[in-house]
Image (tube, rainbow, N blue to C red; front, side, top):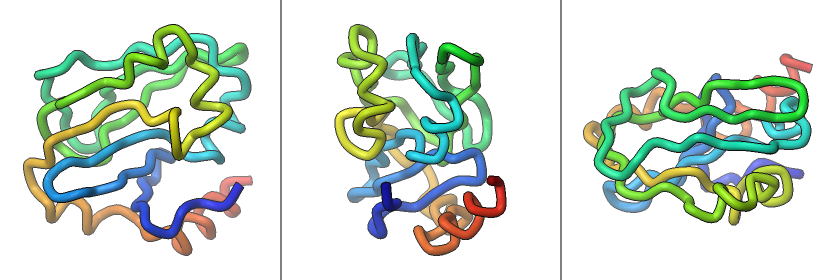
Amino acid sequence: MENPKDLKYSKEHEWVKAEGNIATVGITDFAQKQLTDIVFIELPEKGKHATQSKPMAVVESVKSVSDIFAPVSGEIMEANKELADSPELINKEPYGKGWMVKIKIENKKELDSLMPAAEYDKFAKEKH
């Protein structure tokens, strides 16, 4: 699966789609493949504060438990409720129905620290 060009990416393998001051966040295709079958996800509640590069959620797969890091700081506006009953959406559609949270961006300059798709592609290949 190709990484969408209109997204930004973190070194912890999260993606961000910034629309105005709202960032939709999920994990990349590379990350979900590394985790294998995702069986449970613990997402932050609406109103919680996320801090860039700090854990904000937990994903459990058949082989490990992993923290999901906030790619930007801000208030959690929404968590993807569908993932509670269908965490496998992250494996099936990491850039679509498998999104995790929407964050009200506090500081848009934080987006500048994230990688464009081409840079992330190279970064992920080096991790293989």
